[in-house]
Length: 493
Image 1 (cartoon, rainbow, N blue to C red):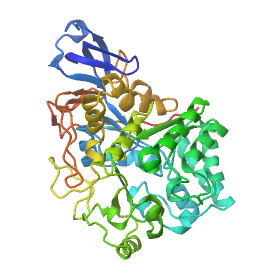
Image 2 (image 1 turned 180 degrees about the vertical axis):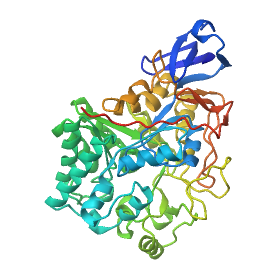
Image 3 (image 1 turned 90 degrees about the vertical axis):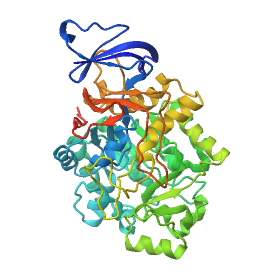
Image 4 (image 1 turned 60 degrees about the vertical axis):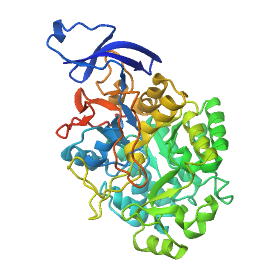
């Protein structure tokens, strides 16, 4: 049993902030009051003074590709208590969940059904192995990118349905990697989500400003599918797919929601994305559509800045699954920074990291060592998304209150999946009966430290982090022996 004493408690479900004690018994919050007595069931409870700190529900990251202890440790120090890979997903989900459980996870975890892997099975005859790296490699294959035949579509729809029955958290759709495919395919996925009461999580295809010949504007495709099918549709990383056209896209999403469509949206506070070098939109002939040049791209594993079209073509041919960083906005430019700010400030916009695994020069992507071994490379959003958002939106600009920050980082993301994932219903808020997934933040020091040159520097200012009532971070230090993470799964029907 535990009592956190005297913190500024923010409950995003009620929108309240007050100085109070929070009592935890096992994995559940049992009291939130101005003064909780250490008697009765709480006699002998451990007491931690959090005066001057902000206490709230741990962050729920809907978009994390971190399937490793190393990556989860970076996210823990960023305030995250649940990491869900919903944009890409993994297949088969049973193997993904089993592998995570066997390996041990310090944060809660979950996976969507992978549209990309299902298509790979139908188009390429591949047998998915719940391996993100293998999934990244096949994204650049033209045979995977093309429109499915009727038989292929039936095959991958059956696969997705079976994955949902097995507990997958909706369907992850990497439409941006097959942007010339028939829009009817996406409507079929939306119909499946509507029929099962789940959701889709989509990396949208290119928008009309980038490609006037696109079969359908990517952001419009999401809103159209939501309106036509009634499905819940989540628009992933709107900042990176919209880039300098963010205002038009946000206006379109706002109009769709005003019309009753169930569309949610996420953003992260960086002007660079990360993906596989073989992605459709990084083809040499496609760079001009987004105002990119080869030097906008750098390779994660080596730090190489791509010097020419010829080198880009070579990298795509030799290792299409290699992860790269793509700079699409200048974070030091006032106008570009304001665009990122507007994406985060958009009503009900959810903070999600799109965190990627850490890669070391020997090719490994995980480590039990802490601090992490030198030389690890990733996108800085893996370590810094949430602290950076809080620093910019709460501490520096006052755009959000603390309660609003927790609504964007904890409550709203949990609600996206709560309708079909029972374990999410007690996450993302702070009251009696809520899960004891809690973060205690020092408002004077909260900040990201990861940079593009030093991307694995942990954030600072997370004083304590509890997952299922267990300290993962205490007094700013990570407990390397704590592995309390549990699966979050769907339960249909």
